[in-house]
Length: 166
Image (cartoon, rainbow, N blue to C red; front, top):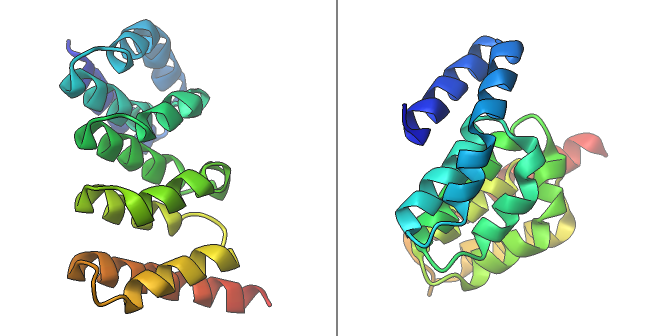
């Protein structure tokens, strides 16, 4: 079984609530995942970063943080997909790396990576600086249309959550 297949199996186990089996699979694939994340091949790194989310490997957040700095847009995108998955139930994941996400949203050369970073911010706390940043992107005519739409949608969601709390 490959890491891709194991990660897909782990995702199925996580979705079905089979925590014991998932933990056993995590233990079995831990070293392989770490090795793949340190590979010189960007494709192996991308698979590893994506697998972290599929395995629901919250202990690997620091490894994902390194993935956000990867030279490969595919690896950065895979790390963002995992962050998005891990943060669905826990805004702390996004809150812990919010400054890095802000940087990716505003400066990454790859538009897909920028949009994924915007989507990740949706799962964090509704903080003013994020809402201001996303609102600014949404109103910037020089930005790509898909990025502007994503920023507008997420900013609106965060504004509604902030208003509901007050």
